[in-house]
Image 1 (cartoon, rainbow, N blue to C red):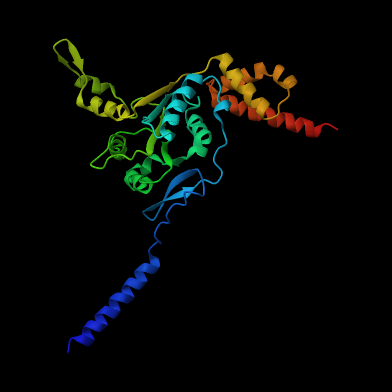
Image 2: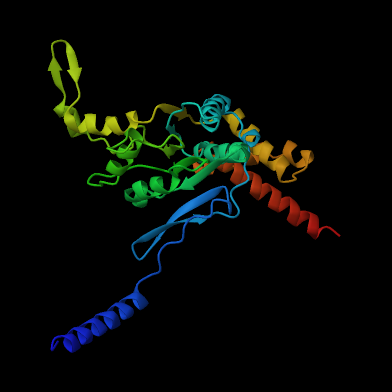
Length: 296
């Protein structure tokens, strides 16, 4: 009986301390509103992550992407199988910069979002949260693509281990309604060093790579579908530039006299890529609009 007042005071102090802690702790992350958007970003603050709706996703269409017909057909076929509930593969898009890897993934979303496809963009440093993201997608009727853009890992980084677990399954089986689409300039996603060649060894008449190389190759091998991109030819580059120029309202008369300017633009950037063609088309369209306003 004598201890009751002391216990009550202790409980009261504990409740006061918990009240102060709750006031400074961040609120629990909201559950995703899957009806708010077709694309989401994984965001983190104060150690807590949540799915943020992307209210205005990029409107690019498959028809806007020129000179990558084989790549378009392969990823579109894989995605059609996925949204139809059939088996499909995780996809790794690799190769030349600015040639449409990221744009192709965005265009696939726009093509199949009406059939229940959803996209979740996850930055490389947040890949450690993949198990939490996957848990939120389990049992949903939608089909989810986890999108990792410009993915590569440096020596000493460990986030790739979480990616490997989701790609190949850990003790928990990967969900049937989720795939990973990643883009990278590296086929094996990790840096390769000359010294690693010294780890190779001979077995009978075969050369076997060392453990370090095997570890790096094993990550990209977990993607069932590899899609490669290559630098554009001069004609391909011009076709893309004129496509975007027409989309932006540039007249045929201006296009007809702008070939040398378009080539010089690419030469100055050291690349004939779709990105460079898009940038030139925007510049050309802007200058035409300015000249039209200046004319009396």
